[in-house]
Length: 362
Image (cartoon, rainbow, N blue to C red; front, side, top):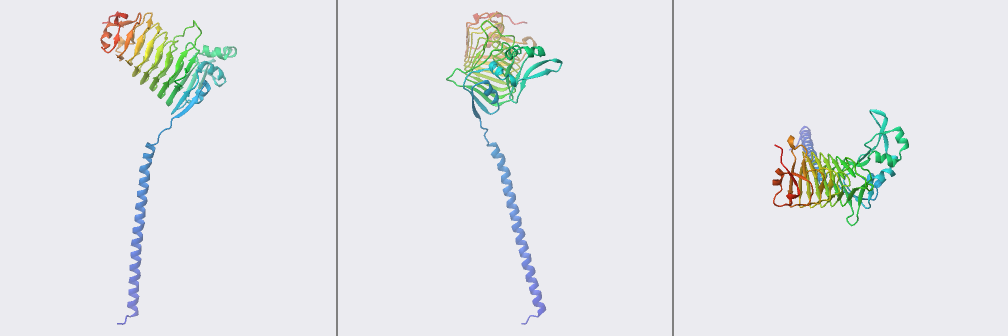
């Protein structure tokens, strides 16, 4: 059979059209498959990134410091400062006096206070000075008169750690300021340190000179420290959520042993309160909660204070206290409300005869 030219042309046209359509379908299938595969890869990458972020560990730096200048220059978050030699705060302030600035009093242009604000610390005098005083007083006299001290602020996971085999101290010569102050820190650790006011023999501290002062800190931990009151209190805390004290000694305080204001929980274990000769109370609580376990409270003396003083007991103060497995003996002149006797369980060894018993107010 002989095909006509017209029929041959039609058959060729059909073949070409069929081939083109098949190629188009196959190409689009491959393109769609590539898009789908790309989408799968992109989706995998996005889901893996959060996992990598979650698994990222923050490295804690260990830095050795041996003096005041090295201490303040290395303050920060996520670090352990290994203190290799005793640090004298007052001498450090004198050596760095040129870094401090005179800040005018907004209410009196003739007066100014001494201060320095950094990201992780503050230095500030609590007294204003006139132009004449600034010109005539020496740096040491200004620092003493101004009750100037170091306050560590806004750190996260900061550890101040002395070397256990050495007697590492942090001292201050001022008689009306803390040895160290803290504010707004989170997860703070203070370990293996002896903290003390070093005053001339015969000199007494003023109204506010705790060893450690905390304000608005979260999760404070004090371990194996010696808090030599030689001032007003061993610990003064305001608006702190938790303070944990372990294997530490608080002694030689002159006003109170511990003073807590709006502190959710202060837990003290395996520690010693000894040889505190104080004007006021051993434990002062204002809307705060105190737990003491497995500790020795002995050889303390007061002029007229109470063993435990609830600051606003007659105004529905929310404070509470709990003692467990403690030895409490040979404490002189402390008053104790008879209603508190029942709060000392059988696990404690306590000499109630040491206390001057007072009746609860009705």
